[in-house]
Structures are given as C-alpha cells and as structure tokens.
Image 1 (cartoon, helix red, strand yellow):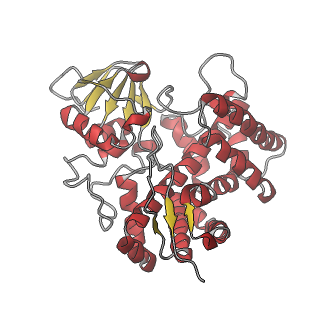
Image 2 (cartoon, one colour):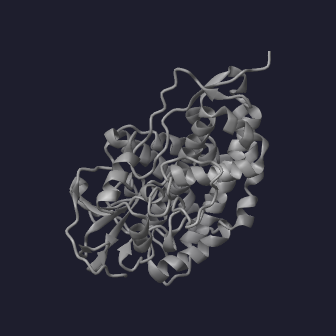
Image 3 (spheres, rainbow, N blue to C red):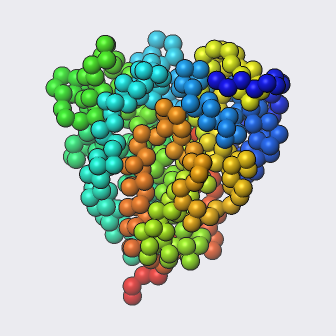
Length: 408
C-alpha cells in the first residue's frame, strides 16, 4: 500500500447508503464528501469508512490482501443462502465473489470460460429472442412501465441459462428470482428466499450426484483441495442473481430512461451501433448499477492519509469515483459520446474483482436496447412520469413510464 506522508483523522459524515432519502441526490452528497475527505467515516450500520475518491478506491480495490471481499452488513442480501441452514456463524464464503488472493484467482480461472467475449456471443440469439417475445407482448399497448414489462423480464432467464438450468425450468426459476428481488420487506424477502432456495437446491443436488456440462456442476465439483459445501454453492447461486440479474435489470432501466428523456439521442442510438456502444459505456460510468461494494480491512494500513485498523469495514463508492474532478473535469455531466475513458472509469469495478461478466453484460444491454428501439422507435417518457431511483449498493430506477405511437 502507498503510504500518505500525512496522517489525519477521517471526517465524520452523516451518510447512509441504505437510506431511501439519499437516493435522488446521492451523487451531490457524495461529491461534497469527496471534496471534503475522500476517506470519511460514517456511523451507520455499526460504522464504516466511506471511500469516495477515484485514487483511494482504485488503490483499495487493487489490494485484496488488505481489503477483503468477505464482508457483511453493508448491503449484501443473505436471505437465500441462510435457508441452506445456519449455525449462527457468518455464512461461508461464496465461490468467486467472496474469496481473495490465489483462491479467488483459482475460482476465476474455473469460471472464466463462461464469460469470455466468445462465450457471451453464444447467448446472443437467446437474449434477442427473449427480447422480441417480451416486446411483442406489449408493443400494441402504446404505453408501459419498461421496468416491469421489459428490463425485469429478460435478465433472470439469462442468469438461469448461464447457471445451466434446462430451458424447461428457466421461467419458473426466473419468476421466483423476480419475486425475491421485488420483496419490499425483510419478512417478504425471507419467504421468497425460502422458495427460491428450494428451487436452487433441487438443481444443486441433482448435479452433486450426476455432474453436467454447466456452471453449477463446475462449482460443485471444482478440484481446489476441498469440495464447495452445499451452502457455499447456494450462496454462489444467490450472488449470481445480484451480479447477473439485478445489475443488468437496473442498468437497462437506467439506460432506457436516459433514451426516453432524450429523443435526439434515442434516434441516434437507434440508427448507429457506434453511438449506442458509446452511450452504454458512458451510462455505466455516469450511473453504474453497482454503485458501491463493501470490503473488510484485514490488517492495519493507511489510505488517503487515514489509518484503518484490522476489522474496519470500508464502502467503495464506485459511482462517486467516476465523477472525481481530479480525473473527470465534467464528471457530473452525462456525455453520451464520451465512451470509454482514460483513465478507465470504475463502473465495472477494478482490481482482481473487476466484473468478470462485463462482456456478457455489454452484449445483453446492447441487444436489449437495440430490440427496444427497433420495436418502439418513437418511445418517450410520459408527461406524468415520476422516475424514482432505487437505493443501496445496487442502483437503478423503480419505474420508467413511457408511451409511443402504435400502428393504426
């Protein structure tokens, strides 16, 4: 770790990323904090350090041996994994997501073949078919909420296919996944979690006895010294929902909103693949679906002139880093032609845990937007629309109310 020559006490800030009140102006708040102290301290959720600066976040993300991904209490949902049985201790580490160092890289090597650009391309026909079927179902209505009608429909089926669930079982699993993520209370989430876990466990136990040529089987039977436990595999599958379903749903909703708000941009993105590609990348920078992730400090260290002790928790606010004026002179401005930036924005994360599924995510978002604009070329935000941002570590839009002209 790079040591700052100056040691200072972190500024105490009143910030809770899980508070609905911060959803609409979160980046204005984070900007104030970032300029005041890029390594601040919040007392929310038992206390954590809030990292808002690009350099500080990139440095922490690059040192997994000090900033461990195995952390709890900062927003990750464990309700599905808990249904596999708990002894009161913290849940076991999920393969890939919650391992660091060589163990993480070993899991990454096992799963990388499912996420290469070539592997992502193999899902394109499925994604395009799902998009067209979904859009056909409501295109004649002339109005819809694109979140419930479209962006929540396609990603869960893609995740089910990615895990290796047979086509006959994908819609059922996807429907339970949608119910889980739509839960509005802890009690409802626990109920939905039990239902979802029961379905997942069926697929896991089938593969434990008879391996198949799919992702779940590779996780279950990975040769890494000791087999993954059933709870670990279940936790992995549950986190795949967050990584592959929630993020794509929220990213697609955010992008659909940006296009519906701007007819000129909508038309240019519809007519030019290059414009659409640049738009997607800028949207990931400007409003990343993964707005923040937590880390646990494993040993004393200094970051941004602030001392951190073993056991401290930190929150890496990726969305704030992408607007850091030290690297992005107009970071609070959405410029669709900006495309990929130098330095690289952190909308896909950084370090060893940089999003493994980014190639599939880019493809899925591209196809979803292409098909949306082809089916509804004149879609626009309704005059009575009141888009509301979601809050937490994964960020999106609750509703994208649009309308369009239909053929008479």
